[in-house]
Image (cartoon, rainbow, N blue to C red; front, top):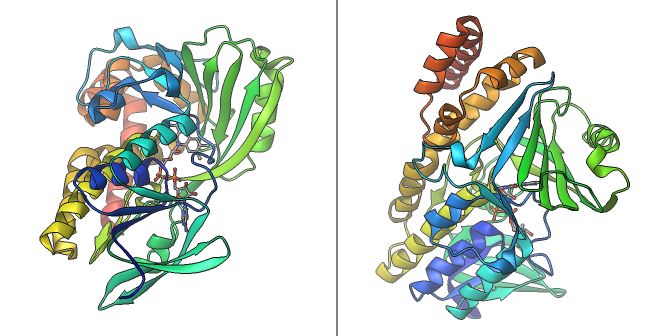
Length: 408
Ligand SMILES: Cc1cc2nc3c(=O)[nH]c(=O)nc-3n(C[C@H](O)[C@H](O)[C@H](O)COP(=O)(O)OP(=O)(O)OC[C@H]3O[C@@H](n4cnc5c(N)ncnc54)[C@H](O)[C@@H]3O)c2cc1C
């Protein structure tokens, strides 16, 4: 085909796309990343990342992209329960349970990762929107891109769709329908008086954020990312009420308000096809109970970039060859996402008083086992001993979920 050609075209320069660019370029593939925005990191984000993520991905945390270090979190129930999670008291770790977290500067982090990918040979086009694909023999042969008022076609061997929850790759190439999402709204507040800036805060239950949760992620003592995800009602009244009533924000300034959707329905049914892969939000790679998406997106991107580069080199970009990416991703994250989905659905039906009760009874390490294992056995046994009725209620709805999932 005449015109521009690249081994791999990556659509979207978020955590997934940049990670894919890094690993593919490192193996010598000819990589183009197209990003529709003029800059990286424009989407709103709480910017909360566990320290273990950096350990697992082999990235050295640097001052240029770390805003604040967290030693733990408070989880506030709707009726007064408060669970304090201190990193020092977390003894369980399968992948990355220990050590607390960071509030990162996501824009600076993405720029740092992209710089490294470019040094390895990847190319980035900003203000370049993928608008379609040329498909031949069931495989994409070119990506159609709108850039500076012109339409360009870039032919390639593999397309990696890292284009977020409203992914054109998922819709137009994979033929997938919409995902289950939660609308989120986030304010960046400055001039705050945060008493414990090294503690994140999460507020759960219908009182704070129906069918979602509200977060306060301190960027430091006087600045915070304050946001929430809700379903079935508008987000703004809940966030405004919280800000108004919370002493830490008295006299504080709202410097940014942005909304976006987070996919919370679990992994998409298909992550690879001949000549194409889906990663990150586009693939539903978000932990449904927490909304955590940076880490799984980066794992996915790193594996997908590597597999795509090797597949191109071997001259076999069939779905069968690219399936290695899906297998390796599922091995690391499949159960975490699946259990996270079941847990979200089970907790969604719990009334506020029961949510409080769970928080009062929860053993922190057994909770970490659910999220990092995922191992729900010790959590269920512990709760069964402490409150069999509550355990039956939660577990009953989980069983219903499993049965419903198996039947659908
Ligand atoms: C309000 C909010 C708070 C969050 N807080 C956290 C948090 O604290 N911690 C955490 O781990 N996760 C958080 N998440 C989730 C996390 O941000 C995402 O899961 C993660 O960014 C997914 O990365 P991605 O690369 O798959 O997609 P994205 O980050 O969405 O990146 C996709 C990129 O593709 C580009 N793009 C889209 N379509 C096209 C196209 N047609 N052509 C070219 N480019 C295109 C977009 O502009 C974007 O840059 C939050 C999400 C929201 C909305």
